[in-house]
Length: 184
Image 1: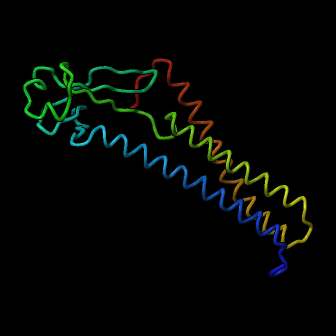
Image 2: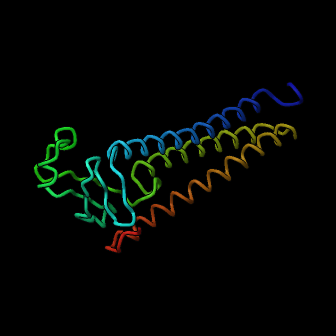
């Protein structure tokens, strides 16, 4: 009992803190991986916001071609005659219709992979909370209860924020799918 704390209470608090860190790390890694995947698809291309088009490394423009309102995706395509005559075509595309890029209009949390990882994070935080509640029920020492309660308050605050954001983003994505225009 170092410092008046029981070993079981210290282990429960430590494990809950580990789960909290794992949930945070999981989301950071998932966001980074998604951002890298999106950058890979558009590597070498530059988005021109003032003209709403992408510019390829050879200087050709990919214009807005199609909008999928349900999936919140905007497709940009270069003119086939420009792409087919380009010296960089073999390294860029094998399509005879010109290079196409997809630009997703959703935030990380609105994406399917974002909601999946947020759900995993919420599950880890819920597990941490259950562990802490069980440990609190097993101990009556004030020092143990203060430690466990403070970790539980942190886990609860972060878990409720994560769950609220997940719920809001999921509901928001469903509401905007009715054919409303894509936000810029």
